[in-house]
Image (cartoon, rainbow, N blue to C red; front, side, top):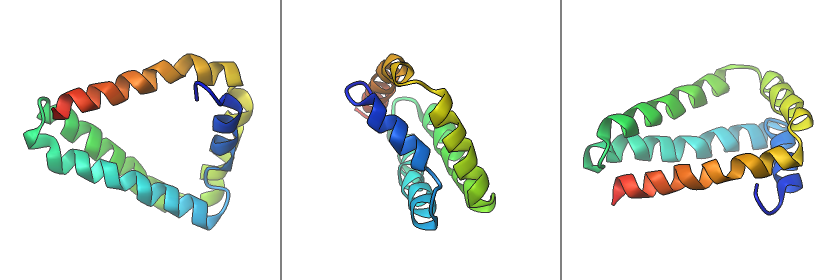
Length: 106
């Protein structure tokens, strides 16, 4: 997002575009969600890990249920609206969030 915002925008535009991409994306998202839930009791912030994990798992299950065309339409709409500069502006939050997760498991 920070160094290749146009590529990040392109990836967002492809979310849900085919059955393979859609269901692979959702399934891969469920792996860290389950990890957050399972590891929560060993983390520094068990309640935060559980809430985040269950939220990710629940929204992933909802994405399995809704029609793929809705998921694709939503992601494609936002890929047009979000300019590459905006991806760069929000990228530090990804680093902060990832750092907070690492801190929580150490």
